[in-house]
Length: 133
Image 1: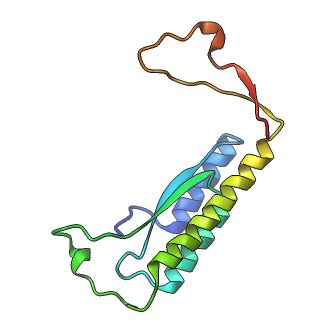
Image 2 (image 1 turned 180 degrees about the vertical axis):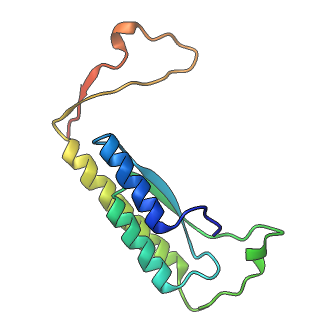
């Protein structure tokens, strides 16, 4: 994919965000099976996702779009099972998210919400909340 950054730059951005704001939540989306993706590329994606520790993420199978150059790209390994890879990635992402959520049990956090077209009394905005299991 045509990304404007490398994995190293992405890690650096995540590290700086975490340094600037402790406890920040990070999320991302991943596409599995992009034409040209090798097993090594996929393993690097798993490592990146694990290193950063996303709170929430989703993975999707690549689907070709009409008129794009990648639609015409050949698959490097037609026997490779992208669905199994996507399931493996999603299982890792869900385990990471569950682990992060479990560490929050019993903690108090400031929460706020935005409800469309309904006025929320000032006293209920940004009220501390205790995470319960």
